[in-house]
Amino acid sequence: MEEINNIDYIENIIKDNSIVLIYFSSNEKCNVCTVLKDKINVIGEKYNIKAFNINIDKFQELSGKYNVFTVPTILLYIYRKEVLREGRYTSLIELEEKIKRYCNLIASKGNN
Picture 1 (cartoon, one colour):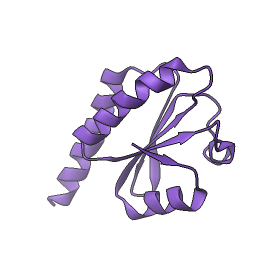
Picture 2 (cartoon, one colour):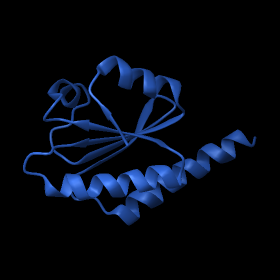
Picture 3 (cartoon, rainbow, N blue to C red):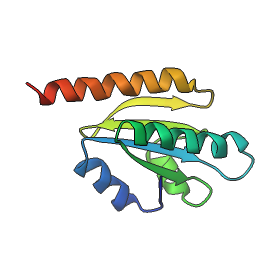
Picture 4 (cartoon, rainbow, N blue to C red):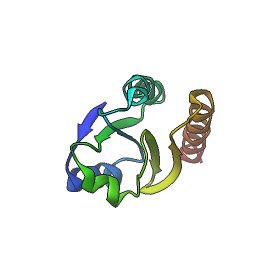
């Protein structure tokens, strides 16, 4: 999972990729963020999704731009549009199921 600290870069990533997973986390007082980060990365790799981490301790401007006020927060963008937002207490099983459905939808549209 690549660390992001530049608004222009993340906007280009969202613009240039059909599906992008963004994980907002904090190293300070958030043990869940550290554990969840690796698991989110595995889900991204499993579904061939570009996954990025934004550490709000280092780059608060991005958390404001994306209206992220709690960590961890997970955003999923498909074709430049936010389609999923999960925060705080996230079930990884449910999250993966939602991501899988979106990926299947994209794949079925590509076959038409």
